[in-house]
Length: 218
Image (cartoon, rainbow, N blue to C red):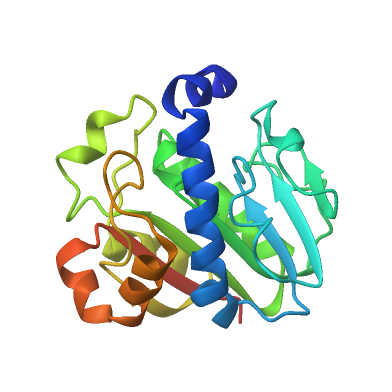
């Protein structure tokens, strides 16, 4: 098993972490706030350093991760649970309006594990609850995808949507090209540039290499 703490320490500098937090603050306020009701009960699955869950407005917030550093990064108002996504029984079942995950599903070794995660998510969601997934799209990031040691499972927007439907969820929105592949390096991340990008979906077709898929529990 990959040592998540060591991997994060190697991969993300302090400056890079601060940059991601600033980016997610804009993503949440300018985009994801439209998908997440302000009074919703929300779970961030594989929350990392809390970039999403700390910045999204919600009635109740939960976060899950196996990284030992994660609890120190999530806000005090977030209920953190250290557990695998393969077993979410420690969380309140049927209580969530939204389950969100970003750049996580590609870390599983096989589709059978992914099927199990989907079933766990279905158990957590209220009827009508949403599962929002962001991740690298192998269809458009087939070169860069393998530059990360912990990437195992190649997924496209099409294969993910099919898997979600098989799990009993109804796919409502599929954006094949959403965000750029990475926020690291020299990619400009000023707040006004991110807001402009989000407001101009035609630009996604040229720069987007991550998918956005939204599915709902019947």
